[in-house]
Each structure stands twice: as structure tokens, then as C-alpha cells.
Amino acid sequence: EPVLVLDGITKTYNAGTPGEIAVLRGASLSVAPGEVVALVAPSGSGKSTLLHIAGLLDVPDAGTVTLAGTAVAGLPDRTRTALRRREVGFIYQFHHLLPEFDAAENVILPQLADGVPEADARARAEGLLASVGLGARLTHRPAALSGGEQQRVAFCRALANAPKVLLADEPTGNLDPATSDTVFDAMMAQVRETGLSAVIATHNMALAGRMDRVVRMENGVLSEG
Ligand code: ADP
Ligand code: ADP
Image (cartoon, rainbow, N blue to C red; front, side, top):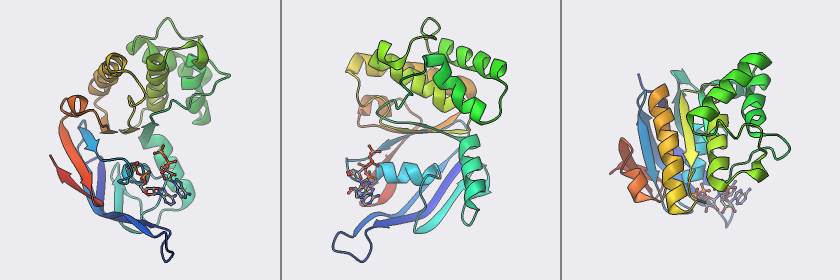
């Protein structure tokens, strides 16, 4: 059974006004357990909108989202939010870490919000950070970390609650090529080890080519290759 299914998703912004823009026009995608999909799309094509809909942060005008076997349409807000927090991890181009907390705390906090006991949350955070080479950076605040290290912490935070799907919006887009490769390698190793599914938007065709499948977005629809 696929972990994520988007079927015929449409989304129009500013409907009925002169600024009307039909961003998604029947976008469909199915992601199998453990599959890593590269999403290649020009800027402004609706990639962020698609990822937000896939991750239950936004609602489509039409079409259906099925996440971890649950059809999302019509679920009450609280149920959708709970499903998102359990099953989806997000990472963006910018790390969005909390500046006043250290690396470990940034990975611990989402677990506490989910009711995980603090000792367990800390153990998991430290394990995740060590797995991406940050075992010696646990007590560094974001400002004391390099760009690549910040993104690796953000990746660990995305995995903190053991989601089934990672949604990544140009996670290495702000990094120089060498750092981008290092961060991508660390992410992929951990994704493979945990059997996580992922949709990773990127402009970097070398990175896209290392994923299981490349999906392109154009004119509001998705196509293979
Ligand atoms: P991408 O991530 O591919 O750059 P986005 O999904 O962010 O694309 O945006 C696609 C288009 O939709 C852009 O033209 C953008 O300006 C517009 N857009 C995105 N979000 C909104 C919104 N909340 N309201 C109005 N227009 C939006
Ligand atoms: P990101 O791709 O960094 O996640 P956003 O989703 O914030 O960016 O925005 C993507 C694009 O959509 C930008 O061009 C932004 O100007 C546009 N956009 C976002 N929200 C709105 C909105 N409420 N109204 C109009 N345009 C928006």
C-alpha cells in the first residue's frame, strides 16, 4: 500500500479576481513505502503548494490526499493535525530552528509536544544527531553551527516523531555544492536506514538522479522522468 497518494489535486489562488492563478491542475503522485521521489519543478510552478497539500498544511480545491492509508478529505481539523504530526516531517530551504535552543533541544521539543517523556526524547535526539555526524554539536545553538550543520539538525527535527513521510522543499538549496552533497548523503543514509518515504524538491539534477524516481511538475501536473 502506498504511503502517500495525491490524486487529481487542483488548487487555484485568488479565484474570481484578476490575480487568479491555477497552480495545480490535476496533479497526481503515488509514493511507495521506502521510496524516495525527486520533485523537479521550476520556481513558481507550485512545488511548495503541492508539498503543503501533501503534508496536510493546505487543502486542495479538488482531488484527494491519502496519507498512511487514511483518506484526508473531510477529516476534522484536529484529526488532520494529529495525522500530520504523526506521519509527516518537513524540511525547508531555510532551517527554521529555534535560535534560543541548542541542537539537541530543537530535536527534543517536537517530541515533548507529542507527549514523549523527556529522557526518551533526549536519547532519540542524540541518536539522530549522531547518525548525521553531529554527535559533537548537541549543545551548540543554531548560530554557532555552519549552514550544512543547521540543515542536518533541521532534518533530525523532521524525523523526531518518526514520521512515515519526509517532505523536503529544496533542503540543500541554500548550500554550496560540496556542503549540499554532504548534507544530502547524510539525509539519504538515514532515510534508507529507517525505510522512510520522501518527496524531495530540488533543482540539483545530480541529486535528483540519485533518488529512486524523478517526477517533474509543469503546468500544474506531474509527469515521470
Ligand atoms: P514554487 O514552490 O514552485 O515556487 P509556490 O507553490 O510557492 O511555487 O507558488 C506557486 C504560485 O502560486 C506562485 O505564483 C505564487 O506566487 C502563488 N501562490 C503561492 N501561495 C499563494 C497564496 N497563498 N496566495 C496567492 N498566491 C499564492
Ligand atoms: P516558500 O516557497 O519559501 O515556502 P511561500 O510558500 O511563503 O514560499 O511563498 C511562495 C510564493 O507564494 C512566493 O512567491 C510568495 O510571494 C507567494 N505567496 C505566499 N503566500 C501568499 C499570499 N498569501 N498571497 C500572495 N502570494 C503569496
